[in-house]
Amino acid sequence: MHLFDIDIPNKITFKESEVLSAGDQLTVFEYNGVKVGLGICYDLRFPEMAHLMAKEGCSLLIYPGAFNMTTGPKHWELLGRARATDQQLYVALVSPARDLAAGYVAWGHSSLLDPWGAVLHQLDHRPGTLLADIDLTTVEEVRSQIPIRAQRRTDIYDTVQKS
View 1 (cartoon, rainbow, N blue to C red):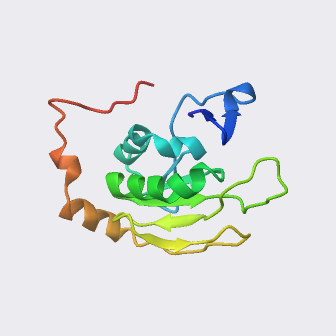
View 2 (view 1 turned 30 degrees about the vertical axis):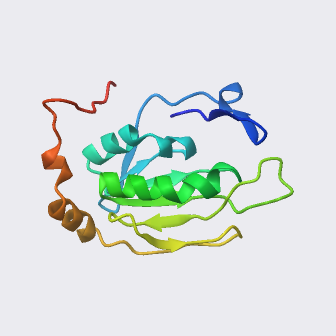
């Protein structure tokens, strides 16, 4: 949905808008009775998008992405943990393995985070497969113990989907 157009001096300049078009709707689907939200890479930086998918009943958000060697070590896990914590759901971060010979070098570190923001599983930068079971009762337990949805001040602010 969001395009990765950045310029970090002496590090990286990248403009997805030169080759891609932005999305215009949320992607939410059901798999085996579980509502899943899908964001792509840079979408991880937008908590409003995650909030709207959580409002639609998602218990898992999946973010395939290729954070680079500048943003990856600083933000990949941090943002994943933030989305898991602020939306009180599971977050899967899915990255290609690092290939130093590639024109664009990905950070790697595919991960699974729980609704408390804990890293349940994490690969390193090498090729690998991460298979894990998630306990959906944890989503409801966390949401009942820290009831941020019920405590939102919608008399002052709200996050709404426009289309």
